[in-house]
Length: 566
Image (cartoon, rainbow, N blue to C red; front, side, top):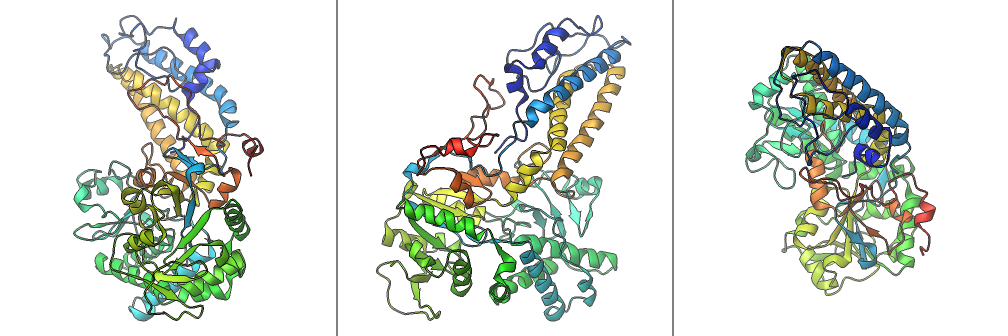
C-alpha cells in the first residue's frame, strides 16, 4: 500500500535538520536519577524527529524529580518545531494520482492478453447513477414491500459511506474493520448516527470480531456468517439505503427485525439491476451517467496497436454493454476484442464448470449450437472459466485481468489460475489528492512524531510525568480523529483505520498484483514497464535501504518516464 506520508527516517538520512536536533539534544539529559539511557537501542528505527531518547520498556529509577515534566515538555516543543520545519520538504514530495501501484512485481513485457470487466473498469459512472439506484430501490421498498411512505423524505447522501465496510445483519450496524478483525471505534453506525464506543465494546465484548461471524470468502453473509462486507462500488447506495431506513424506524420508534430489513433492501437493490430498470435509465441518457470514455478508448487503442489480445467478461447484459461501448469507443468496438462474454455470472463463472457458453445474436437471441471456438466479433453468454481456458489456451501469468471488485473479479483468478490481476479503485484518486493537501501532511507528520514521542517517553512512570504523557495521549487521539475526518467524516479512509490497513486493504494487497484509480493510468507507461513494489521494512528490520515510492508516484513529470515508449 502507498505510504500515507513521506517516511521521516528518509529525511533524517538525507541530512535534514533532524540530525542537528539529535546531536543537539544528545547533550540534553533528563534530571539526575531519571534512568535516561545513554544511547539508543541498535534495532530502534528513527521514525520521527526526536531527541536521543530512552528505549521503550526501560524504567526510571526516580519518580520524585519535579524537573522531569519540564524536560518532557522541552523535548515535546523541540520535536514539534523540528517537525514543522520538515513539512515544506515533505509537501513537495506529493503522490501522483495517476500512478499504478504494485503489490507484487510484474512486467507488462510478459503480458500478451488483457482482460477487462465492464462496469467501473471500462465504463466509469457519474454520481448520478448512485442517486438513481437509491431512489429506485427506495421506491420499490415502499411500493412492493409496504415500507412507510415517509421514506420518500430521504435522499441519497453521496459522502455518507465508503466502500469496504462491514454490516452486522443481526444488529443493523455498519462499521469499518481493520486487517486484524478489529472494529475501528467511532466508525460504528446505527442508522445515520454513531454508536457510542462503550455500547460497541459491550455488544462485541471488546473490539475484535471473531472469524466465525465475519463475512465469507466473497464478503457475503451466509452459512452462519452474520457480517456482510460491501466491496462493490454499486453497494454505496445499498449501504446508504439501509442506514436511512434504520434511521426512519428509530426516529419514529418503530420496532423492526434487522434481518428482514437487510434482505428486503438487498432484494430491492437487486431488482434495480435484474429487472433492467437501471440499464434502461442509463441507456436513455447515457451522457448523464458515463464519463471518461475518451480515456478508456485511448487505452484500448494503445493495446490493440501494440498487438495485444483483449477480452471482456462482464455480468452486465448485451444491450447495456453494447450501448455503453458504442458511446465510449464507437460501433466497431467489437473489433478491438478477441472474445466478449456477457451475463457471465461472476464469481460463479470462475468456479462452476457446469455452465456452457451460449452464442447471442445482435438482437439478443440465444442460439443452441455447441461452442467449439470463441470467435472474434461474436458475443457469448455465461459459460465458465475452465471452458474459456480450454478454448483459448490463455493461461497463467501472460494474462492480466482488470476489475473493480476484489472478490468477484480478482480473487479466484490469482489464487486458482495464476493470472495477473489489476484492481481499479476509483476512490484512490480522491484519497491521494487529500493526502497531498497541506492539512493532511501537517496532521500526519506531527501525528507520527507525537506517536514516537509517546513510545519512548512512556518509560517515565512517576505521576507527574504520566500526567504530561496523558495530555499527549489525548492530543494524539484528537489528531487521529482529525486525520480520519479528512477523508470521510463517518468512516475515514478506504485504505486505513487509524493506523492499521483496513480489511479492504488486506484483501486488495492479497488479490491484486497492481492497483490504480482507472485504466487510463496505463497511458502513462510503456508496455515494457516493470512495476516494483516498495520493500517496506518489517517491524524487526532496520531500514538500511532507501525507502522509495512506486515509480511515478512522486512529483516527477511522466514525460521522462515515457521516454522510449511506443
